[in-house]
Structure formats: C-alpha cells, structure tokens
Length: 333
Image (tube, rainbow, N blue to C red):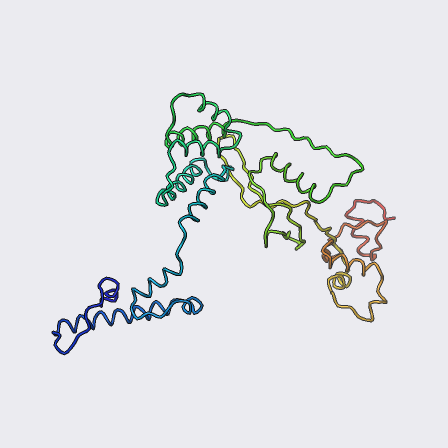
C-alpha cells in the first residue's frame, strides 16, 4: 500500500487537466500516504504536546516541527558527560570490567561532540576512579616506564580484582562510647553508617518510599535505618552481592500465650466495646490491649492438651486426676 511513500518521496506536482494518468495516479498515492501518516502520528501524540506543534499539511514538515521542540544543546550534553566521567567511582557494586567499559562508553559519547578524550588521559581517569584497595596496583603502574592501553589496563584490573577476591582480609572493629553523653540523631546515624561500611557494606543510602519500613510475620512494623549492598566472600572465591539489604535497629517478636478459656480468647481478639465491659476483669482488658498492639498472640488450646501446674491453676477434678496420672505421682495431693 506504500503508506510510507510520503516519507520517501517528495510531493509531486499537483495534477492539472493536461497531466497524464500516470502523474495523476502518482499524486493520488502520495496524497493518500501523506494524509494517513498525519492521522496516525497525531492520533498517537498526547493533546498537551499536539497543541504546541504548529499545524502542517505535510508529514515531513510535521515531523520537523516535532524535532524542533526537542532540540538538544551539544554544549550542555558535553558538560554533563564530562562531569559524569570525572565523578564516576568504582564502588564494587559491579565488576571492574563493567566499570571500565562504562567509562569507555562515556568517552565514546564525547567524541561526536568534538570532545576527544585521549587514550592515556582515559587510562589515568580509570586509575583515579579505583578505590584504595587498588593502591599497590596504581604504584606498580606508575613505577613502569611503558604506558598501558585501555585494553591492557582492563586485563590487569581484572587480574587484580581476582587477586583481591582470593585474599582473606580480617578486620577488627572497636566502638567506644563516653558515658553520660547523649549523641544527636545525626551523629548516631553517621556512626551506624560508618560501622556498617567497616563491616563490608559497599554502599549505603537512606531508605526511600516503601523501603522505609518492613513488616514481620506478626505484622509488626520496624523502621529501616539504611539500605545498602553487602558483599559476601566464599572460600571457593565466589563473590555474592546482596543488594537493597534493609538494616533495622531491632525487630520485636510477640509473646505467644496458650489459653484453655475460649471465652477469654474470643474477648481478647474482639475489638468491639460496650457497656458490659465494665463488668469484665481488668486483666482481660489488659490482654486485649496487648493483642491489639500485637505485643502478644493468644491462642485457644484444649485443657487436656495443656501442661498444667497444680500449684497455680485450678482444674476440674477429672482433668486434675488425668494430669496427676500423667505426671507420675503415686498418690494425689
């Protein structure tokens, strides 16, 4: 059907009475392609954007008007890429090979913008982006007379990464606290982050959105202090990164209570209140309040299944005799 004819061919002359049938048919095909293309493009553009684009009768002119609305500044893009290239640091969240390839990609994006990054300069940028664990590796490079290419640096960095993985590093952490001093929340949070970094966390950040709290199996809410990436080293040389690991100060576990009084269990789980509540023993009201706060969990269990203490629990006579028999007493008290 040649729907893209208006994109590939310029508008032919408008036919006149003296035009040939071939010229008339050619113009009709182009006009149909141009009209349908304009309809399809306008149908898939939101109204907010469509109103800012000037009206055009040709599809090529309409696309050119859309392109003019999104003209980018090469200078601003070059400045952004240069800042990204100079600020990028290797934090261990990915392999060193991926890190170097990422920096090479940024340098390649600068070339069409007439910002040519020389190979030796890129090598120095990559070396400066490596952490302090690669300090001996940097000293070795600076002590050599010959210069490495980016590919040679990539190979050497991968070998150094494998060596660091196989190296067992023991870290001793000492935390001291002066008595009688109350630290502010900012100091406490900073000390927590610093301590976690010393314990092997590659990166730490503040929780955002739904990450700010977690819920345990009892629906208790715990505040998340920080979210980070933790690296595990195995004896076989395998490395595992646990990403988006949520750190909480503490998780509360409710106390589980078994009760053979079904009425008490029902009342404890019932949130409705009425005038009859004033006649209920206060201990049941306390239990219900603790259940509502999810501090305790109460569950019904039959008396026969309970391990009762005859000194503290009054049991019916039949139940008491059964418990005494199971306890192995010769003569009941």
